[in-house]
Image (cartoon, rainbow, N blue to C red):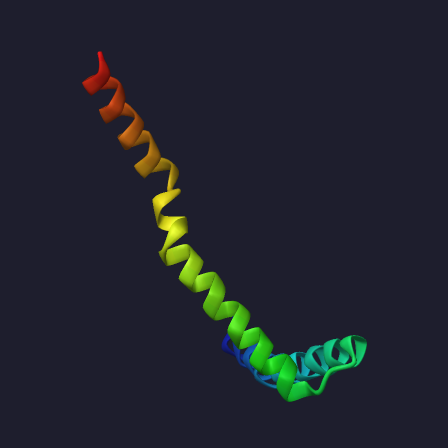
Length: 78
């Protein structure tokens, strides 16, 4: 890939991505009949809750960890 193409992609991405995010936020806020700052703060809250779940309960539900626990229980029980 040439440097011109990379520069073009980066320029488009630098200008298009923030514009698209702003448009998506405005459309979501309008469809939910909510102010935009509330949409932002609600999104931050949801992200924080998902991260807390993944680090708490989600870690204990890891299939590899559950497999190790089941194997240890099976060996100890028989």
